[in-house]
Image (cartoon, rainbow, N blue to C red; front, side):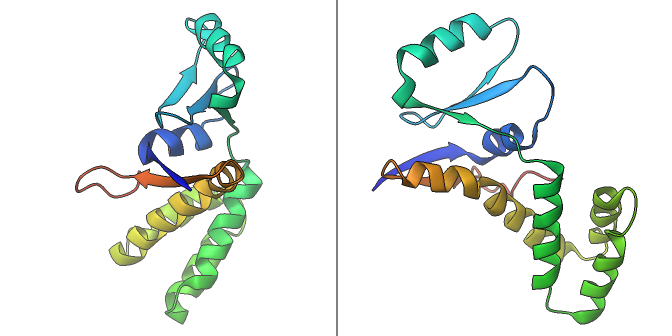
Amino acid sequence: MRKLRVPARDLLFALRNRVPGTVHFLDTETGEVIPVFGFNRDKVMEQVHAHRERYLRLAPETSRQGYEIVKRFINLVGRAEVRHELEQTIQGEHAFRKFRERLEQWPDEKLRWQKYRAEMTADSVRRRLAESGITLVLDFGPGHDPQPD
């Protein structure tokens, strides 16, 4: 399989961005994540249509998918007291905000969460690329951790 290095920050932004009218494509030859906005729409879409096999449309995750990722992560937390506190944060309104705020108390868990979320968010792209014989490699850059929440 051919490896494709993709800037993690760009890919994760594209997969979390739900701004109406904005889409992103992944160039499967270069690893570039290409945003499509009003000002560049015609030019980018012309390129995408001319080389359909080269570009992969990146669909942002839904709130539901994000919530499921949070739940799966919480189930992986080893310390019962931390797991219990995190479970409480995702009950009711503003679950994501409360979860992120509570994670600030445990820097190691916060780092684990960032890495876990990056991998899980990118998983659908990873599977789609694998069907074409491409292995996704997230490039976090030198000395950089996954994009913070």
